[in-house]
Structure formats: structure tokens, C-alpha cells
Amino acid sequence: MAGARRKARALALQALYEVDSAGHEAEEAVTHLLANERLSEENGAFTRELVSGVIHNREKIDQNIQSFAPAWPIEQIPVVDRNILRLAVFEILFDNKVPVKVAINEAVELAKRFGTDNSSKFVNGVLGSISALANRLESS
Image 1: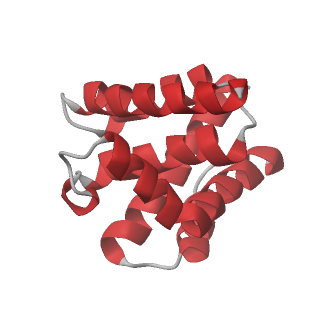
Image 2 (image 1 turned 120 degrees about the vertical axis):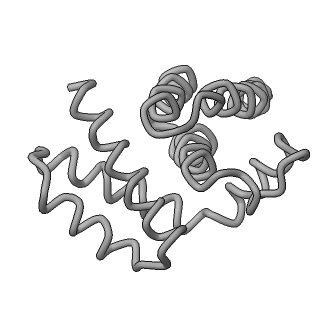
């Protein structure tokens, strides 16, 4: 199950990357990617839900990323890292369906797989700060 969810997140990342870098429509990107993969209907829906959630909340997500990585203007963050962060921030602050630690761990794994040597540290640092905010919001 966890492996299938990770694969669904990887596909969501690929779709978001395509939307961000090539300007393609999100639904087309997801449909194309899912057509070439063997995912259960549930995990295909999970991929679509992640992409849709990030697209619909992108402005607020980017504001959160910007406030926790102020030295990096959002457009200067590498495309892969930026979209990994968007995916994780959506899961942490907007979706609330997985524990924060799971969302961070999944993002770090995506960064190790798709990013540069420094991506996982950068992603982990930004998400660590955001998770502290999420924990404060849950406590109040």
C-alpha cells in the first residue's frame, strides 16, 4: 500500500513538474501519466486529488513556502524542489489526510529520487519549519 501511495505521489510530482515547466494542463498531464502506469483506481484518484489540490491552492501554498524559505524567491527554487514542496505543503496544511511526519518523509524521498544532492536537505528544512507551524495551529 505505501509503495503504491509513493508511486502515486511520484506521478503527481511529475504532472506538477510538467504543468510548471511546460505549461501543460494539469488534467491532461495526469491522464497521460496514469495511462502508462499500473495503479489501482484508488491510487489514481489519489494522484488526481493531489495535483488538483496543489493547483487550486498554489498561491497560498507558494506564500507558505516563501515565508519559510525567504532567501529563495519561489521562481528561483529548482522546479523539482518547488513542486515537491508544493505537494508536501498541500498535504500538511490543506489536505490533513496523512500525518505530518509521513508527508515530510515522502517529500524527502521524492527529493532524493528526483532532485539534486542538496534537494532532500533543503526540502526537509523548509518542511520542518512548516510542520512546526502546523503543530502550533493544531494545538491552538
